[in-house]
Length: 156
Image (cartoon, rainbow, N blue to C red):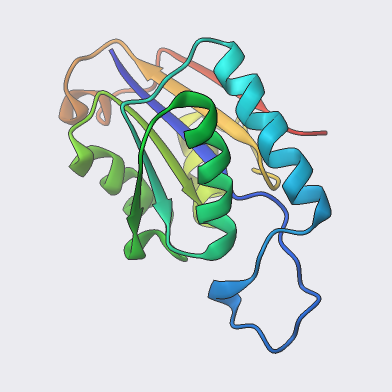
């Protein structure tokens, strides 16, 4: 079975205009939502083989919450910063792991979640978690099929 978890980074802080977008940290809400969503994910017994994350501070921090809960190492990928839906899915496929979590940004995350859910997920709010499962053992087969199952959870 192939599994994919998409996690949009938690809410970021826009307070310091001198910071480059890449360096924006999480705000108070994001620092609360991140650990809470990671705990809910972990409580379901889910443990990806790898966590791929954008190099942006807000994505790295969000991925860190999930890493701490699951004990799974983070692999930072520059190409996930601002990535579109195709690149996000490509990164999962390239990992060759059968259970992958990707922590990245919108609009790519929402576009991919909408596509994989057949329109069931219209938007990925900050710190939302969408999971997808395919009845296949090969990413090339899985990506040619609709997922057999999907879930969606948000902090609110």
